[in-house]
Length: 123
Image 1 (cartoon, one colour):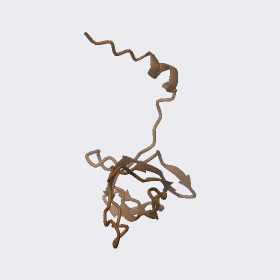
Image 2 (tube, rainbow, N blue to C red):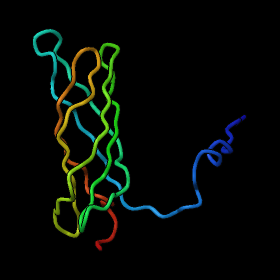
Image 3 (cartoon, rainbow, N blue to C red):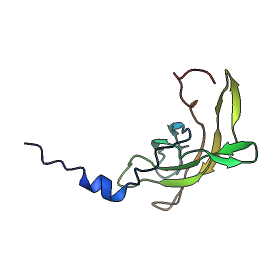
Image 4 (cartoon, rainbow, N blue to C red):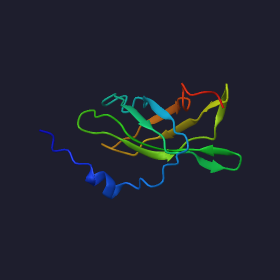
């Protein structure tokens, strides 16, 4: 028997506005931290927020939580670079930053987004 009820979704989601700009997949690994004491890294995967206009260009907000390592994880909240054209009317974004501190340390990372709408028709 399925007791799943979608009423909670209707209550907390504004489903009247069906318009959406594009988003990007983001995945990667953070760099190794605590090289002398306890060397380790973490992985992450997320989808960016929708495009935020910036003049004739745009950027995206990115939030993620890494996987666990010995009972801790790291979070990040920031924004991408402006769009970087890669041909075929497609683009990516770059992101270079650090995670929040957890368990007394942080991790650096550099990642590019995946292209938006990878199998869609060219614009």
